[in-house]
Length: 208
Image (cartoon, rainbow, N blue to C red; front, side, top):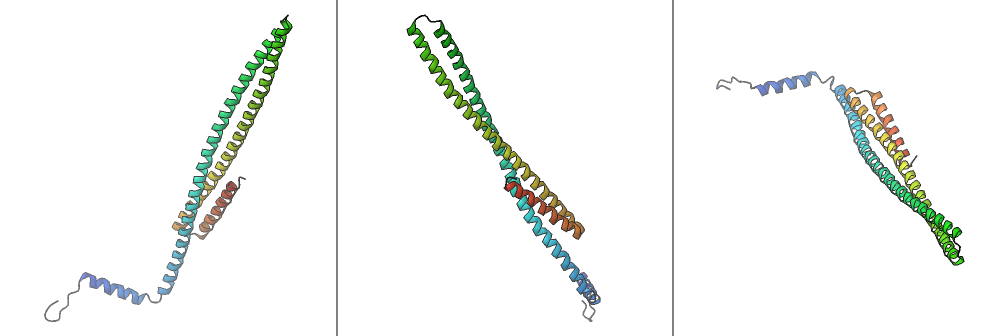
């Protein structure tokens, strides 16, 4: 600025003047632009919120999938333990059967009635022991079958949770594409796929 009224404009003054001039010339189109921007933000906000909700539900589904897989492994391990115990019982049963057969042979070949009676008592004892051992072995086998069934059920549920999680991940991917392209059909596809994921998750929750 000089002492004779000559004014020197700075760069920021030019920018302000340009902005004011642009605003003055753009009054006729301002409302349409604002409406368009508002519409775009509304779609963006809606998709962003839905994506956050879908991601949260997907995280829960993923956790449930991991938990059911761990349970399936634990139950399968319990079944293996019970099968081993049952096998041991059957081996014990076989051992008693061998002893019983020897006792019966000794009883049948004994010439003294007292000895025959002693061997008969042993035969009866072995028979009772075999009955008890057999009952224990069958009980262990039944428990092993129950653990196997529970393991299979948990694995089926795990697969359902995994399917639901995958579908929700696809929905999130569609949401990202919808945000970039602003395509309404992609937004609708996102909601449709997300609904499908929730249905599969419900099937998993109800063991279907």
